[in-house]
Image (cartoon, rainbow, N blue to C red; front, side, top):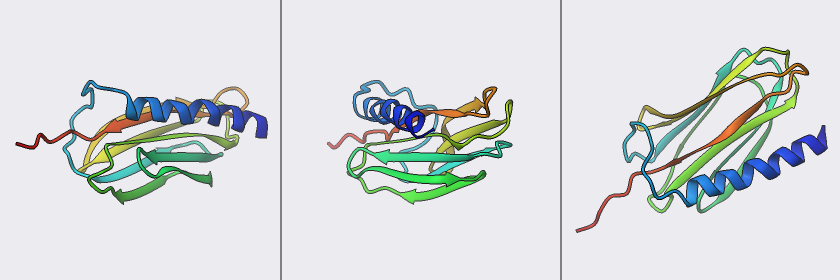
Length: 138
């Protein structure tokens, strides 16, 4: 199980950096330039998750053995341009159970991803990233 977690972390972390740092397109849905963010994971998944969230300045924050629902509110300073979150089962649930992960900015949902537990109860919530809208300075 530790090898599985390590390998999945090696995939999730670079993906978070790539999607939060290198994307030049503005493909965010809705949202505002608000730096008030809420991370939310809900569903009927009864296992535990390892949740990793980050920003482009301070790096990763890892929370182990998270039960659903998970809520985290934070306010980012202006120098943070991109954020991301991902999760995976640290303790398996039951096959077919689901979890949905959302990023809110300024009270609006800006990113959503869902996953279903596999036959062994394993669940991986793919990493999602959000880039704050740039404000042009005149």
